Length: 219
Image (cartoon, rainbow, N blue to C red; front, side):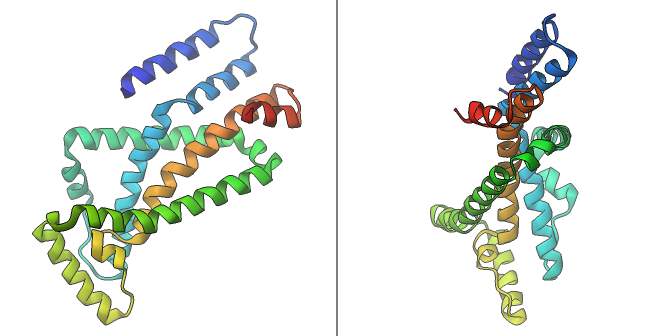
């Protein structure tokens, strides 16, 4: 699926660069718009979320003196194909995010009110998912929790009661609430900002005008 989408995106970009009537700047803008609308960007963001959720969970474990998931064990649990997918996803997402957000930066400031609204929406949805999904997962999973998960939860619960900082999400799922927040927000913020502001920025830079660049994108 990802390979097929990459081939499709590549064909579109090649077609753009073969168009003699377009200038170099316009070709770059259209190429970035093609990449911003690609499903591979969302998939890469999701894969990056898998990496961030483990990283944030380890930070929580380190603060509370709990066993840390090593990088080797993390990749081992994903398997060779999963590890390769995550590694490629993280590299692709970070590179795409850096290039496209640099391209969109002027538009982000020019339409600051839209930027703020999108960020607040992402934050609210991410927080709702953070506190809504783990209880649902626990309810659906029920007795399917493994003995190692139960042991980890019991150990975490004993330490949490002593320290006075219980994290019910960690006790229920084996992962901290901040890890779930990273998992839901990271894959959401990047693609949404890039998907909205790349075409807006392209139209703005092409001279469509301040309001037409915004209204044409949303309409």
